[in-house]
Each structure stands twice: as structure tokens, then as C-alpha cells.
Length: 454
Image 1 (cartoon, rainbow, N blue to C red):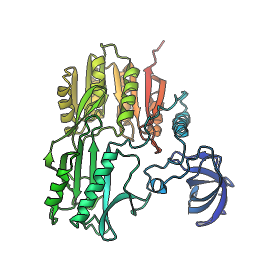
Image 2: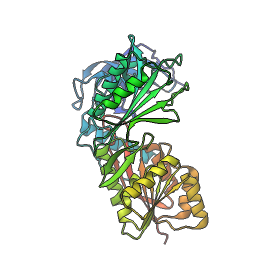
Image 3: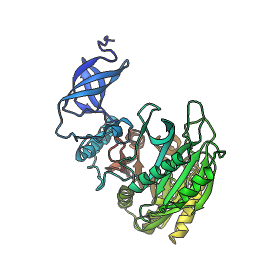
Image 4: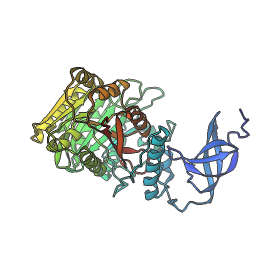
């Protein structure tokens, strides 16, 4: 192996040739790759090396000698440092193209020949998030809210989180001020001490209803009842929960939720259907883009009212209920019992009788279907980042649905799964949707049609 003539803290002049999947600038020094913070393709930068590894290293831009025409100036570096908006320095049209190229490249690496469509962008690429989970720490003797610096436990205080709905930011700041007024302390994760760990806030965009979950280390906190009473009085808060997480863990929520005031849920609307959202419900983060994503999925399914559709990993039934008016029957599969209960309530709320929800692992349920040779016309999958389990791929191959609509949040696992299915299925469409503007994340809708054997 060639010796690397680079050291940590060394200052180097670099030419940026590409963006990595994480949105970092890519530079080569004698064939060695450096991933450079705050650098764009085409730029000439002076950077300091922050880490040297065997195969690649990392650097941070000190000075930009030649700027990209797509650079956005006057960026608040807090949003980059915390990972809230790592692409904020790149013009939005170029962010969309970056995500399309990432998806195109990842599919091509698996030998999949498909032309990825232009990314469906957002009309409002800021202030879009309908959910926030904000850590509370004690800084300079008082409770402080903000975000951690990337790859660290150092809290950077924030009042404006840029990509969250303004009502959520306002509520977080009001709760922070109440904690300070009653002298409650933030959580000390090193010594597993303190009082308030996190503030979770959810907003239903259609109704404006807002849910707060205060996550504490213990309920034995002076003035906790008074703080909760004051939070409940905030005019925008329609649901208030207390959650206790006493374990020394990075998991945010504890197992039990206590309704302190207001409603058990908040109610939102997608494509004309209403959904009740509980504290633990999985619900898409970006309301505007969710509607576009689901419309893409519905059009891709090409339903005529005669098909049986399975919605795998259905959560609280948002996709299932959106598909139901065009299908003969929709069957949703979800492993989380509470989510299945919510899905059934949402079906009743929307007067939809052709929807059924099964509680269980998607892999197990569809394996049983395959063994019993049950009929399945269209399969919609919206898996977690790890993608489809190998056993599920086998069940799909046995069931042979005529079409698969694959909603993905991870290009790498999407490409892997499509490659495993390519003997039986052909990709006919792949469209990225920018669910998370200003970040590196790529969501997409891919359509696979079964190949008819001659």
C-alpha cells in the first residue's frame, strides 16, 4: 500500500471534484480521498485535515479560493455543524439533481439499467418538519435546548431550527423558558443525572393541532406539576403527555406515556383522508411532500378497482387508506400492535370497509401467504432503512404479484433488493421525492413489473 503523505491538522490546498452521498466535498491527493466539510464541486479550497484513515480521510474548509456558482452565501454554520441542514450551502435546484444522481449511481452499481426521473422538489424547502425531538441539557447553569454538534455530545443552543414548523420552534422555546423559570435541570448523560431529557413536539399540519411529550429521567422533580400545568395552558397545545425514561440509553422514549392534559391524539389529513396520530405513531415528517409521494405511489399502482393490494410495513395505515378507494381490497401488515390499532381506527374514521390490517411481521405473514398460494395483485412496500429481508424477497418471488411499488428511504438497500428481484421483475420507473430538503436523505418511488415468460 502506498504511503500517505498527509497528517492530521495539516493544511492543504484542494480541488473539489464531487459530492459524497453524505454531502461532503470529495478531493483527491495522490489518489487518496478526502471528504471535505463545506465544499462543493468545482471549488478550490484551503482545508485542514481532521482525520486520516487507511483508505480515506476527512477535512474542514478554512478558506474558499474559488467558489462554485451554486454556493449559497451567508449560511448560519450552526445548521451545518449540527447536521440539521448539511446541504444548506448548495442551491436548491442542485440539491435535487444531487439526489437524483445519488440514486442513479447507486442503482447502476448493482447493474440496474434505469433512467432515474428528476427529483420531485418541495415548494417550501424550509420549515417543513411536523415533528421534533429536542435534547435538553444544562448549559451555564440553566436548561438549554438545541442540537448536538455532528459526531459529538456537545450541545449547540438554538432558537430557530430552520426546517421545523414555526409553531414547533415556538413551543420548544416556551417550554425551555418554563424549565428555566422553575429551575429544572437538563439531562447529564455522562453521569446519568438530571431531570428533563427531551422535548418532543408533533404538529398536524391540516388541523394545526399540536402534541407535546415531555421526557423526564424521573417524576420526582420539584415543580414538575407546575411546569406541566403551564405547558397545558399554552394555547397551541392540544395534547400533553409525560414520558419517563430512567435508563442510561440513547433511546429517546421510555415505555410508558401518561396523558397529562388534552386529547389522546392529534388529527391530520392526507389526500382527503383523516389520520389520528398518537405519540409513538410513525407518520411522514413532511406534509407537503408526503402528498406528492403518495400520489406517485397511487398512480404507479394503476389500480382499476379489481385488485387485491398488500401494503407492507403499513404503520397507522396512511398508504393503505390512500389506496383503498381505487382497490377492491387493501390488506395492511404491521408488526407494532399500537400502530395496527391506530390503523383500524383510521379506517373507521374514514368509513373505509375494504381495508384489513394484520398485526405481525411482514416476512412471516407473506411467507404464510406464499405457502397457501394466496392471491396478491399489487404489493406496496415501505420498509425501514435496512430494506427487505431476504426471506421476504423469497416470498415475493413465490407470490409473483404483477407489480411492486417500492417506497424507499435508502438507495443502497433499494438497489440491492431490486437486483435480487431482477430475474422476475423489470424496473419501469424510479422517481426520487425530496422529503427532507437541505439534508442528504433520498426518498423514492420505484415501480417493478413482473416479466412475463415467453
